[in-house]
Length: 151
Image (cartoon, rainbow, N blue to C red; front, side):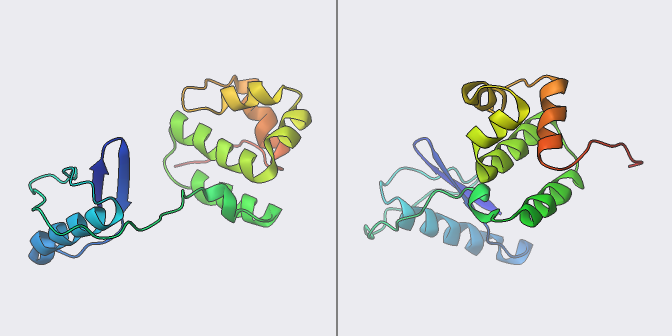
């Protein structure tokens, strides 16, 4: 997995190989980033620089949002189950709740748990700090419950 950065935009590139192809993989990653944003700015690859290459037309890349792919309650439950099987930290938990809240509708969820829509957005923002009570209400509204199990 590689990344490239132009200005404040970071592009995550899901490509790769093995140690034997790493140098060519890095060159390919630079070419991909340059084709996405041919500003000539240096990509954020470690140990490589971008050579000046002819400008290519920009490729339009849509913003990816996991919420767009959660179409049913079964999709949401499967998504939550998969996320909760992985090691979890506070930021990931808040992000996951935000994804599901957008998929179900922020206004609908806010009404269901008894807080304002603005309060829900704030609680689920990257700097949010929802109370345990809010987390428990959100989980309940998602049709799930918190439980502990051995790691």
